[in-house]
Image 1: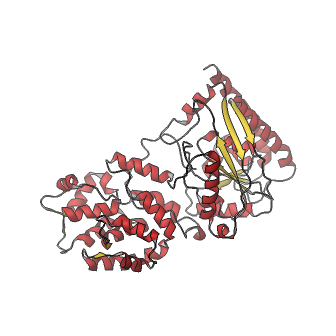
Image 2: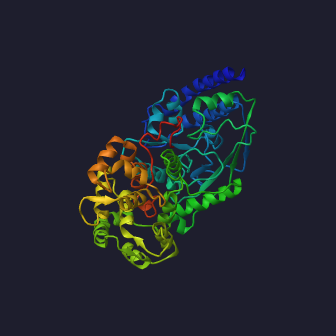
Image 3: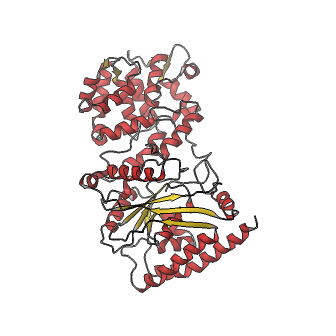
Length: 482
């Protein structure tokens, strides 16, 4: 504990020493740079800032081991670092020579720290700008293809912190430019882990205190050989990202998973609502990506699908009809999607269930619109009432939970053997956690999927809907998405 105040003072002193050099480097420059910082300012300030960066991590007690050779801007315009598990991963930025980073625009406004961030010429992301993700991708492409005029860019492609037990899905942003990338492996070979910063773990302050109290903390930064995309990978950034991820996972000796931060949070949220955590979310994500479904077209065809489903009134269809509706050939991947809805394993599905799933995935509609659509599809005799069996089917289709038991819920809602839309709506208003079950997941995914540039939407990360309560962040610590 004696080390704690000493190290806090040293870190504060180094930040104060670095600030004037960062201010000189960025003087008279706009917050969002249109041209790279060059000339005497960069030549004078960059070596000093790199030295102070090394000194700061040394003062924190980090013993850094560097393996491999750092590639130059002409050889690899982009670094991709993984696994991303802590804010201390900034060590990779210092070791790599202070490349630019992708950061939230709000971070550049923080006193002292904001000026230091601006000194590395970051790519700033605005969370209030609906075109921010598209603009960020365009800026990365512009810098990566500038022929070395801009500094290299360091990206953490996982997009959030994990516990380093596996590599989660890489976001395609760093791979869309189609330029060579150099993977950077991060390891923390310590008996006591005081650095991991996941959303269910310690807070920022707690981790700093625990780490500063250690005599030293080991960290290994390994620069792997540069990976050059082939022609197919240049046209398919997700393919390029998957290959790089596999290489990094193999070198680290850990598995890969198609889970994302959103998947994990939704599974935990489902558990909090006592729903099965293994619902169809992740499987639907994988299958949708493999099929490369054109979701823009499907959204336009949704009314047509709903008409077909209304006409069926419980009629079940086989795999051939299913493929015909989706305008896809019958394949192994399509059979996997079909199997998700074939709960009886009899080779047929209720097309109405699939339409409800599409409605939740494709339309950023409110809860009431989705419920109205579901009631219309399953109100076979059009009398404004549905039975417990039909009610169960609606929720199973909307939640992606094939074995969901809703008998208790049905008894709370229904006054008799059937439930009307008004009864369900009244119940939902009194129990908001049920009122939001259809759309909360959509809210989480829409901003990611539909804000990707057009070339990246060929295989969007769209998943089957799951439950996520409206207050999903109440039990988390202070971690945020990158």
